[in-house]
Image (tube, rainbow, N blue to C red):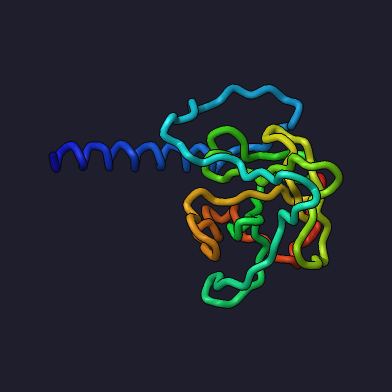
Length: 177
């Protein structure tokens, strides 16, 4: 029985490592380009993109959390999950798709008009149609949650591989290049 548990644990860890490797060094993918998945979706995966039901619902909130040992105001989705941006994305091209998007689920918008925030933000919320769907952007940065953040206030993805960072209200505007 112990050997069986170790085997399942080892297989689970291998799957996580393979998925993280697929996510960490991806190159830009044009929204109009066709790509071949690098990994088939796992039937045991429970991670799905975060959806906003309509534009009348505030899909962005702010929260005060501890990031790298200091208190920061960050952006969260409606459920309070930390939002992240990926340095490899641009305002017109998303680099995190397929296997990467299963670990870093994109914040998707299904409403009409523009997404809204529960509090006033100095930046601009918008939507871009990309390989992930209608993805919410803040100041031109496509937004994601992190599958290993399982509760409000968690920021486990901050600084991951030097390319994933929490979104703060003062995030600089992303250029198209």
